[in-house]
Picture (cartoon, rainbow, N blue to C red):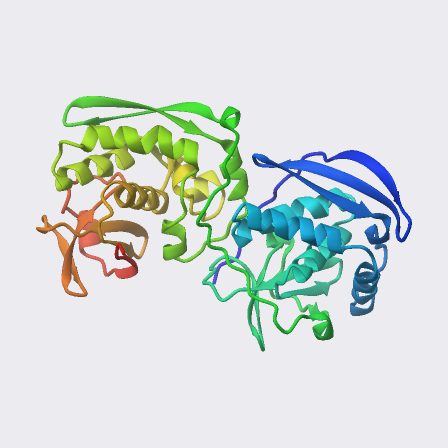
Length: 402
């Protein structure tokens, strides 16, 4: 399995007020904007725990004990309430925890302390999280049974633990170097749950944070122009997002304002076309409205962009276009589809009432190849590139509408 990731910067956090708590000490009421909502929490002085010791099981245990005896419950209650009120997936919740930890201990000032806060808050939020260390590196793992193909992981008795902070080390993270797993099993909640990378809902971003982007392509000799709304906050959400399985990846949604700026307009253009012609239109929109560029040239590594990221980006590769095309067909026609992976290419096949051209027989039905990525030839629905026609493939995701 390959291993990679990146870095997210955090905004400066404002302090509202300081009040005296008779039991614990000074309590600071802090707040920051988390997408379209303000998040606030009370930081009691009892949980402002220093950490200057060398990394060891003993020093980590000492940090935990001090935190556990402090007034940490109001922060956990605020976090979980915000998660519940906003129907947040685990990935978004972790971004919120990161910002709280950054508020209490900026990562650039004391990275170990920042990571310890994240670990403690995720533990107290009910997740199965572990720590390891080597030299000056503190490594943060969380249990997840999902297929993550680009991050280091540990195989322990309770399952697979994925590294959550690999992006902070990058090339400095030597996966072959020995590490010490902090012996803190007695601190774990036996009912602690695993972490999910599935993102099935995006926040409702502020309308004023969107900008307009123009897209254009030609279909059957006619030029089509679209003015869609995009938001850089979506890119921030997925900046460190790993390479997940295709089912998880292909079902990442768009934010509401981007969706409303594109999907109804596409439906208007397609409402008088037969289904196969409409899918052909979406295929060519996805193929020609964006420049092609391999992810390694853009990001220096393999990265799968969500549909909204692909709309925002000036260039994208086959994985990105396959995900966008899949999303458009699903939202407008909701047809059964296959994600198909060749040795160096990903594409999509769609089930029509009557197959068109090159089709794949799968579980009793024919699925027509629809190529959303530019090829040497201008392929129509049901046509496959000469290169892929000679190659073997695998079905990596089957979408069957409910």
